[in-house]
Amino acid sequence: MQQVNFSAAASDTQRPIKKVVIAGGGTAGWMTGAAISKLLGKNLEVVLVESDEIGTVGVGEATIPTLHIFHRLLGINEQEFMAATNATFKLGIMFENWLQRDQKYLHSFGFLGKDCWACGFQHFWSKAQQRGIAREIGDYCVEHLAARQGRFAVLPNQDLNHAYHMDATIYAKYLRKLAEQHGLKRVEGKISEVQQHADGHISALKLMSGELIEGDLFIDCTGFRALLIEQTLNTGFEDWSHFLPCDSAIAVQTKTTESPVAYTRAIAHPSGWQWKIPLQSRVGNGMVFCSKFMSDDEAKALLLANIEGERLIEPRVIKFRTGTRHQHWNKNCIAIGLSSGFLEPLESTSIHLIQRSIVRLLQMFPSNGIQTAEVDEFNKQTQIEMHNIRDFIILHYKATQRDDSKFWRYCRDMAVPESLTHRMDLFAQSGKVYKFAQELFGESSWIQVMMGQGILPAQYHPIVDAMSDGELTDFLGTIAANVQKTVQNFPTHQEFLQYYCKSAIV
Ligand SMILES: Cc1cc2nc3c(=O)[nH]c(=O)nc-3n(C[C@H](O)[C@H](O)[C@H](O)COP(=O)(O)OP(=O)(O)OC[C@H]3O[C@@H](n4cnc5c(N)ncnc54)[C@H](O)[C@@H]3O)c2cc1C
Image (tube, rainbow, N blue to C red):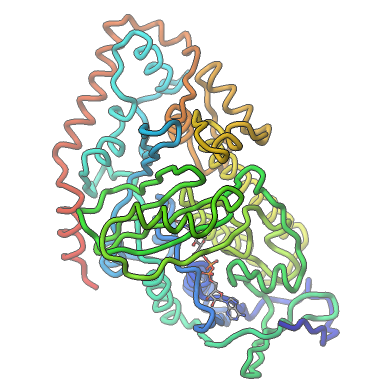
């Protein structure tokens, strides 16, 4: 691909934004296209360029509950969306063999027990655990128990905090339809040249056909290629692979052989981990691994030995680098999706980060020209979010007790960011955990993963001692009984899916 500087227009910072060009039509491109055209399309021209020849990364099928917010913005009906995208419900992630082999724990999307003003539920649970009167911590959480028992319901008043497993290719098509209804113009073709003004701002994308697509604001959704933000603007990349050493994946789809569970399975292996994402009629499978410790062929053999059902596609290898662009917004280009950086899919956070960047862009949309302070703010907020999620993902690797392979020994012994060390120490010493403003993962998430990874608090908050053992037993018993009563009235996940998707008006 060539880069050409051809125009000497005046500084772009004062140029009003009348036309947005989105480069790339994967999940990031179409989420961005659908949102901008629906919410700002009346006053803007929106064009999306995608290449059928290049295609998309074709993975990214597990989500987290924040997707509801995005769907509400777009006015997407849940039943219709689920029926259209072969989707199932997701209540969390089951981590298997992460602490030790043959051990598993669930990170559910639910809230654990009941907090009091001074301390979180984990303090009550810790004392009960020490007294031998506690049940499994997940028994105090509706989502946790429902996921383990294979039950699900959408409740009118007390909705389960849920996300979805969905077909990524169909999702992009679904969003395309929506975007085109709101006036977005799609252009098929391969970008061969990115043209720039004299001040370095992007002025146009030139396609192989010779067609020139000019614009005022460019969104780079070209995936790992990062055609605009990196190949053209040389924005730079902060590499985090020393913290998150996996750099490869192999993906394959199989036919469904059993009723779908309402959680993603993340199964640790000697040099990485395997995902199983159950859709209604097929399963997305993959192996994420570190090429320093396992070859592509070994990973492929291990993956194929651990999947069930007829294979629907040939296994595909995907190479990636974990880290973040130094700037996600540079000049008149904003990187959204894989072009902006990548955190491996262990906690299904990439689609969430796409959605966050879209919402942030809509909130800071530079209609009257690009202002440096706004660009800086956008970049600052994006980096904070990425850093917090990065720490949460590293936790799963660092807090392992596995020492059966070089990979796990590396993870156990590696230096981690000070921000994470502090959180782990604070929890281990005092049972305390705090969520930063705007942070994605809340206290219940940190607690479930820290405990699941073997970090148990040495102390509980003294306010818990205001309760006698009898009162503590009653307090916990009432919560667990209510959770059980709620869940036992739910239909199975499979029954609910059938009812819900069949009654959708597609
Ligand atoms: C192994 C793996 C597993 C993942 N699992 C999850 C998950 O479970 N949950 C989650 O939230 N996220 C997951 N992700 C991330 C998720 O897949 C991506 O965030 C999401 O698919 C968005 O990708 P994208 O649109 O940025 O890139 P892509 O899908 O790669 O799309 C890039 C687009 O740019 C176009 N393009 C590129 N170059 C050109 C050119 N020269 N001319 C024209 N068009 C061009 C392509 O044709 C394509 O349309 C996973 C990622 C990986 C690697």
